[in-house]
Length: 412
Image 1 (spheres, rainbow, N blue to C red):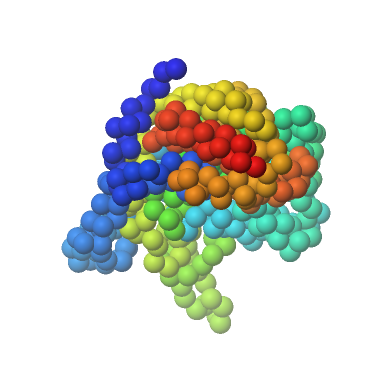
Image 2 (cartoon, helix red, strand yellow):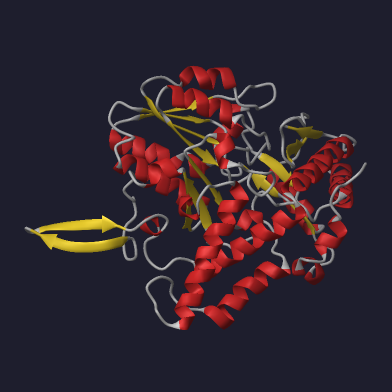
């Protein structure tokens, strides 16, 4: 078994593992740990560069603005965007999804009689906003199913659901429960054939594989910072350059305009260029700086190596956990799948399993993982236990997981 990453060396970059040397952290689909350099980048901003961005003419404001603009440039390079103007900083992936949904409602893409197609495997963050805007517009929200035998998206059914009434197709690039990577490009081509826009939830894929937004042929794509080594409270919404000029921002406030004036008793507005027109108010400047540093860190490692490392861990985990009595994964498949294993232990409640693991220093998550429709569609009425891997995990972490599970089954 060969690993492309020197994960033991990588672990030394993360202060949490020095602070808690016995920690086996397998909850990376929920959030990731932060390397020294990300923490230091955030601290450095507040120590040396703190000022509000844009319009300030004094040295500190110019420096803060430069760092914030460079963060847009770094993230644009990281995901293959063509311009930093396509990168809109938000609070998190949920905020990005809401911004996308309400923007498409405001700009009459979602309208009475139109249809939004999503999937049953979505995180709630990519379901609830679309449910609300569909109700507000008098549109329909329809969910494509997954296959019962393995939980994969039923692609044939999804493609058949896209028709000339469809104005938006939205889906997760990678499931936060099963790790499956969906064929976004194929779906996008069918959506575009019917004139629909494609919005992609890449919160689980961006930290774990190489992303090229133009190769995916999406119109919008979003992700969060904290799942890719960055700070909390910072996310990204990418909008294809074709749509930037035509879209009026859904959320409005200071900083998004060139001019606001009263003409014949009516308020007239000229919006600023993107990304400023989509980023009202004072942004999370330090968060953007920290996220950019996280992207640089991952780029230096190489996203192809990150994906390969996790694939090796996934294969090892399924092999090792097969030895655990009563181990029941949702799927044994490894093709087109990231390093996430959702499972149950026969006769044990998921939360009881997670609690027992936590008491032994193994961090996993239990429940529906904000994807309740997916679990219920697969008959998993109590949810699952989820172990998820990242660059600082190695086979010994999986061995520890397996040993605690084996101990649990012996005492049950």
